[in-house]
Length: 213
Image (tube, rainbow, N blue to C red; front, side, top):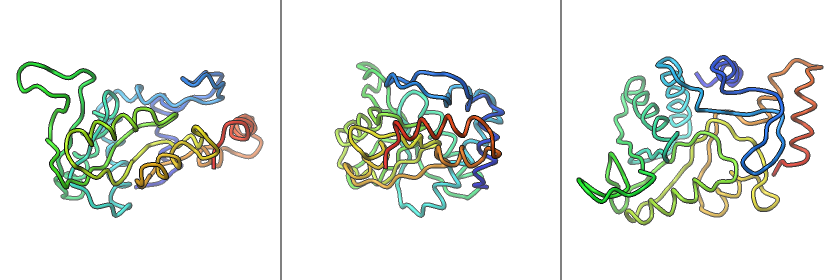
């Protein structure tokens, strides 16, 4: 199922991948935007879960549970776990965090599976820009139990540099010794355009200014 052009078409049809003049959280002017908040139907989340599950299977990673950072990662982890069971017969637990720890009832900041010492965890994210949410997730998971975060799965790699010359995802990989897998990246989007499409030049210009290695 992992056909990159099909995924790009799926994102555009869902209104998730759009083109124009936008400003990112890091104040960069960008000619395209990825808003995963526009996945909003049963079909959308089912198809998206299938893409993540296929990516996880193809990675060959060994893991005990899937973790989805609040808020968007919650749905992604649940959809991926459901697809892994439905399409591949793999029944793995998933869990996610609250933005604020609950001090009543069961308490705590994690909902769903309770990680244990020795667990291998994979993180399911949407689009990573600065990597702040991923770094916060790593701290939270380490505080919960003596776990190893083995891999990060992302739908779109914007291929933008982080704090140095490396792209944010390569920076995370280097800093935290985790494997990173993406369904598509910015170069895949560029390659999906027909020759002469003005979006190619705009994205190439953007990558030449903000891209990382």
